[in-house]
Image 1 (cartoon, rainbow, N blue to C red):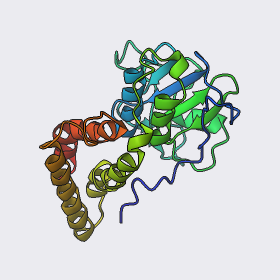
Image 2 (cartoon, helix red, strand yellow):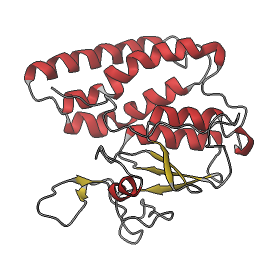
Image 3 (tube, rainbow, N blue to C red):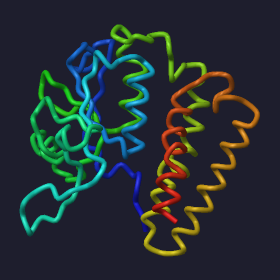
Length: 245
């Protein structure tokens, strides 16, 4: 059975906090974001960075969308994210912080023991450590903790008065849609696929029912719930239907 989306590769869960309650404080130019355009979880962080206007405060690297073998070792068959030179792929931005060729190398430099080597990564250039690799938490940090450097500081993607409603929506969008497309795609039995695809389309219908009556998932406010749904919907026809039938 597929275990996609169960956070098995997430050992880095520190937070940048504007109130000084953690060792990671918001500073312009201190943090670097590693992403892939092919990954919807990384995509939500890219959207949050852009919406808040943090492009000048948080630098960026973008990997090639195609997995490649990460080490020249016949005994190690791992395939993962690579940084392709710009002259080979204009959509990629090399690792300008550590000079790594692969995302795996970044994790290994930071003492990773799990070996999942996922994106996104929020990296601290001051301490040379991975701060966080959980996309929902990075998105919320961008929404809340960098306002003094944001071009759009008043945009609140997680307003307190809607927090319960947002959490409730995320609670069914995440397992059934964001993760659900991958549960379908990587299902190892027809039974698992049938269960997942039914849940997926039931919850797509649920989202459509809500959005047929109002512009955003949470009443009249654009929130992180819309971002998290959008990054899956925008890939649905072009990627998931094509590859995961």
